[in-house]
Image (spheres, rainbow, N blue to C red):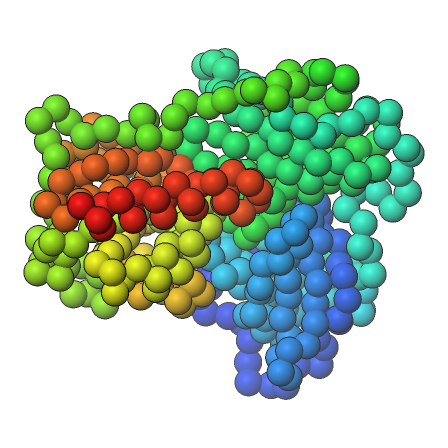
Length: 413
C-alpha cells in the first residue's frame, strides 16, 4: 500500500479520486495520530473530525489551537486530507471506522518529504492513556540552549511552560520567532511535548529537575534531531528583535517592483503608497510564524487602512516557479482574508543571494517573517525580525500592542 501511496505523491495536485460516490468517510470523533520516524520516534498530535453544513472537516489540535482543515476527499477506502498551508497532504487508507494508515507528504523544492502516518479514533490522550504521577514541574521561564548539530554552537531560546498535574503546554521563543503551540505531558521527571501544523512536526523530550532541564532532544520531521538543555531563569531574555536586521550604511529607502498574485506589477513607488505609512512583511507560505503574523496583519490592515496604513507582503517561496508560488499564496490570502497586495519575489527562500537580488538596500534577511516600518516620507523607521504568535500568550499581546503603538506614532508624524 505504501508503494501505491508514494506513487500517488507524484500526482500531488491531481488526486486519484474519481466521480464515484465514496463508500466510506472518516468518522466523527477525536483521533490520535502518529508520524513515524525512521529512528523509531513518533511525533504525536490529535485531531477532531466532525460534520459541518453537510461537509466533513477536521481540526488539528495543539494545546489551545484548533487548525481548521476543510479539504477532505474520499474514494472507497482512500482518503486525501490537504492541509491548508505548506503544500502538505495526508494520504491514507481507512481500515474500518477506527483506524487510518498512510503517509504525510510535504512538497519540497524538488520531490517530497514523506513520513508514515497512522491514526486511531476515540483516543483523546497525547502520548499515553495512563500516566504515572509527575515528580517534577516544568512550569516557568527557562533559559534554553539548542545545540547546532553541524557546528555544535549553542543557539539561545526561552522556554515557557505551564504544567497542571501531568498536562503541559507552552512554547519556545527564539530571536526569529516561536515554535507555536506545544502540548504534552510530564510523567515522573520525563517531559514530552509535540506539535504538528501541516508544515512542521516536532517532538521534544527531556528530564526536568527543580531548576534545570537535562538530556533534551528535539526531533523534527523524518530525520532531524538536536540536543537542548535549560536552566530556570525568570529573567531570561533574548536579543532585541529590532536590532537583528539592519539597512546598509547610508540607505534608508527601498525601490522594488514585483508581480502580485494576479500577475500585476506593483512597486513601492506607486502612487497608492505615497505619503502613507507602509509596513512591508517579508514572508513565505511555508513559514508557520508567517501564518500567525498574516492573521494579525490582515486584521490590522482592516482597522488602519482608512487612517493611512498600507501593507505589502514580499513572498519568498520554496520554488521560483511563479504558478506554484501563486497557488500556495492564494491559500494564505483566502484563509486570512488578506486585502493587501502579496508580491511574489521569484527568489527562493534558500537562495543565499535572496537579499541582494530583491532588497539590496538591506544588509541581510535574518529570519522569516521580518517586518519593516516605513514612515510617510518613504524612509525606513524600524525593522522587526520574527513574530511571537498566539502560542506565546502574553508575549503575543505585548507584541501586538508594540506594533499598534509604532503605527499610531508614525501616522501622527
